[in-house]
Length: 253
Ligand SMILES: [Zn+2]
Image (cartoon, rainbow, N blue to C red; front, side, top):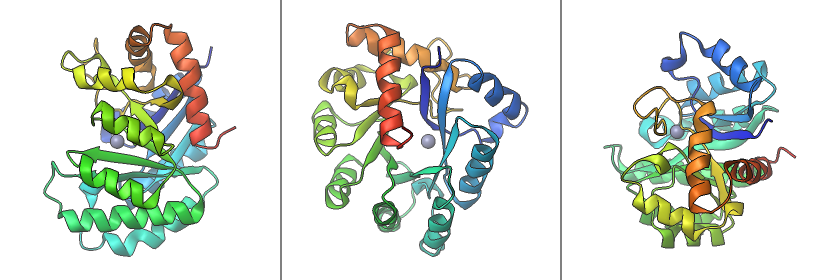
């Protein structure tokens, strides 16, 4: 059965240099039906498109990640626009706010807003990163009303309900299997399966029992099992519904 859809991956990461092609081929000839590789800067957005050209089930998001910004970033918006015209570019991502890092907040907000305007212009969904920036992220989402995913969601159940009400999807990954995931489990409880999508953020955030090791899309099964437990259903049902959600949000059906 091909029922794993990884909505957020970084197979361009150097952690995959030794075996990238073998791994992606093996995953896509197994249970994985779709992967969206996220761009974090111009080079990685290009790399994502190159990977997408090689594999049927792999798609690219193109964008500027808050952690990768500098004085030149506002000048790169047009390049992102050009890359987004590629037939296998399905989203603008990974974009957003990260207040854990020292990148100036005004710069982050300006680039994030410009990326949301671009996505709106192109009628494309977005993949949003929000780390320790819940208030500003929600304010900006309410202003621009994008379609898409709030990835690796770390806000409260209350914020999750608001995001879902705005028509967006909540991205869940390996964190749901961690011992300290209480808040994340409350989020899963608070929103319907119809508003969840699954992801790895690989090579990072491997679920238990592989926590700390290199992650890949095959491990999504462990995330699905944990969500199934909370939703009193089967992992297969979680995979089936979240795959449909992913195909809907990325306009792949
Ligand atoms: Zn990511």
